[in-house]
Image (cartoon, rainbow, N blue to C red):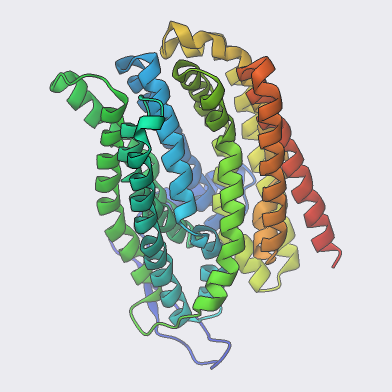
Length: 463
C-alpha cells in the first residue's frame, strides 16, 4: 500500500511554494516500532529515533560483517600475508577518504540547509559537484601513485608493491561510494546510503575470497585478497548508485542546477584537511607499526584495532544520525532544539559504548582465539585502546557542532595538532614498547583531540 503526503517548502527568496514532493511511507509498522523504541530509549522525535536506530542497525551488521571478513582472511592467509592485506586495507581506506576532497563532510553543512530553505537549484548543483569533482581528481592521482610505486618496486619490501598497486584501483570507487553514503545520510536515507558500503561490500569480499582460495584453489596471497576487495567495491558501487539517485531525486525532483563552486571548494578544503588529519591520525598507529614490526605483528594489531571498532561504531552511528537535525536546527536558529539534540546525542553515544567496552574487555582473552592462536596476545591491548573511545563517546558530537557552526578552520587546526601529536607519540612509544606503545599513543592523542574540540566549542558558544 502506498500512502503519500505532500510536503510544501517555502522559499525564503520568493515566498512562493515550490512543487510538491510525494513521499512514500513504505513500512509504516516498522517506522512506528522504531519511533516507539526510540521514545522508550529517550532518543527524541520520531524522525531522529528512526534515523538513529537505522544507523545503529547498519553499524551492527557492518561491524559483524567486517569482523567475519577479517577472521576469514586471517584463517585463509598466512600471518604475513594477512599483515600485508591489513596494511593495504588501511592505505586504500585512508587515500579514498582523502580523495573525497572534503565534500563528504561539507555535504552535512550545505545540503540540509539548501533543502530546508527551499533552494533546490543549489541542492541539485551541489549533489552533482560532490560526485563529479572528486572523481576528476582521484583518478589521475591514483594513476600517478601507481606509476611511482611501479618505478620504485625494486627498492620496496617485496611483499608490498603488487597488493598496493591492486589496492589503488579501488580508491576512486571507494571515494565515490563514501560521498554517496554521506549524501544519503544527510537526508536521513540511512539504510540506502550505508547498507551497500558497510554490509554488502565486506560480505561480497569474503564470498569472492572463499571462491578464489577454496573454490578455485588459488594460493592464499595478499594480492588475491586485495583483488577481491576491488571487485567487491565495484559491484557495491553499481548497486548503490541507483538507490541513492532515486532517493534524492524523489526528494528534490528534477530541475535546474545552481553552482557555487568557489564557496563549496572554499568550505570543503579545510574539511579535507580535517578529514586528512583525522583519518591519518586514527590509522597512523598501523602505518607506523609497519615500519618497525613484521607484517605478522601488523596483522595482530590490525585485528585488535578492528575488534575494538565494534565498540567505536556507537559514537559514529549517533553522529551520523544527529547531523541532519543539528544542521537544520542551526539553520532555523532553533537554539533550544539544537541544545536538546546535543544532550540526547551525548547520552545515546556514551552508555552503549560503556557497556560494550566492559563486555569486550571481559571476553577479549577468549575472543581473539577466533583469529588463530597467535592473535590471543592482543587481548592485553584492548583496555588501552578502549580508554580513548570512552572519552570520545562521553564528549558527544563535538566535531559536528563545530562543523554546522562553520568552524572548519578550528577543526583543521585541531586535526593537524592531533596528527602531529599522534605521530610523535607513536615514534616515541613504539620502539621501546611495541604494540602496547602504539595503543597508548592512539588513546592519548584521541583524548587530547577531544579536549581541544571541547575548548573550541566553549569559545564558539561565548561569541
